[in-house]
Image 1: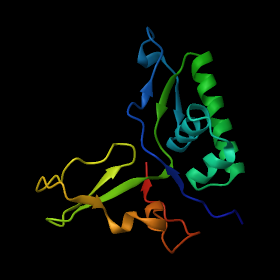
Image 2 (image 1 turned 60 degrees about the vertical axis):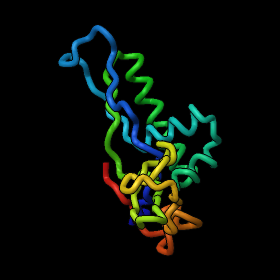
Image 3 (image 1 turned 120 degrees about the vertical axis):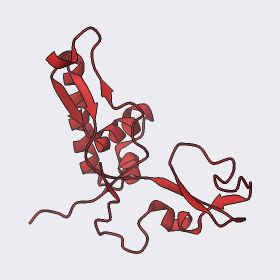
Length: 157
């Protein structure tokens, strides 16, 4: 029996998800698919220069799994660059990390993706009396709460 799947946490989806070589028509290009968890592994390991152990903890996976993901991602990126292929970033079962906010004046609650900056005012009443929501503090901000160890992936991309 295989080991149960562990959800991979990612900070955010990429702003641009398709890259192709200049001057080659898209209909003649071969396409390589990079999953969002592979994209996140490249961001953590190569852009932020994190050690595999630290990056694996951020993604809620084992170091060995992180090593397998980053190896696969680097091979795909090398294939795209060397063989002039298109790169499409999509897919994978991941949980996008989000931040929850609440307005203490009108009690309005809303969600923003991680890395998008904090809100300046409440989108409903324009109040400045806004704070992180209670479920976004402590262990709950990781999105795992009391059911640790179970597959509680929030999103299939």
